[in-house]
Amino acid sequence: MAIQNKPSIRYLKEMSMVVFDKDFAKANPELELYQVYREVKKDGDLRYDVTIIPAQMLGKEFVRTKGNRNSQGYQELYTVLEGEGIFLMQKVNGDIVNDVFCVKAKPGEWIIVPPDYAVVTINSSKTEGLETGNWVSERTENIYEEIEKMEGACYFYTKGGWIKNEKYKKIPEIRLEKPMEKEPESLDFLRYGMEQ
Image (cartoon, rainbow, N blue to C red; front, side, top):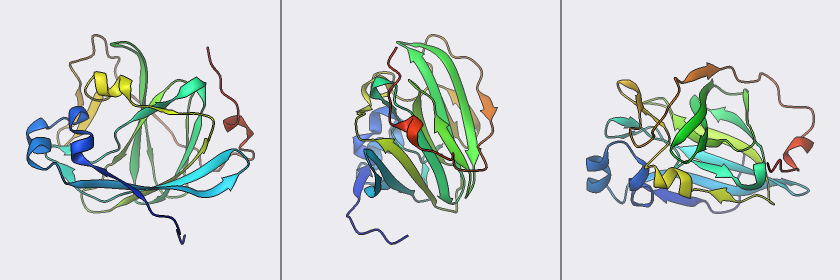
């Protein structure tokens, strides 16, 4: 896919507070982690973004996005374009995690982020880059503060596997859900929030 617009680049110094290996983050503030190309395509009030996450380790942890939740209960639809990724999703109330699961996906597979869940995209390969596409409403805003406050999502994906983030008071065991093999026939479910 030929992308015209310039990407926004996320550097390690912008998310040092949410990574597992704080010493590595401190030593490598200018490390470029991933690029986001926004509004590659449009469909009414929906936009399609592309995120490119090169293969690298953040010390002990696999490289990933900062993690965010969509405001007003808007859902989001992801697909893997290249590589293999893990999508970690959590629903929290303060420092209590009500639910957490992950979806492992490869090219051509699709993932829906449910209402009020935060999502973190992880490149689970040490050698291959990960490229994802996602459809999201332009009416929603990214909420980063909840994950920043807890210094990361409730699990970190490391060389040694999943490690719980001890900042949370209660964390359920993580479960594995399967991705969808086909794109949903309609994107209309993304156009409406589901505010509680």
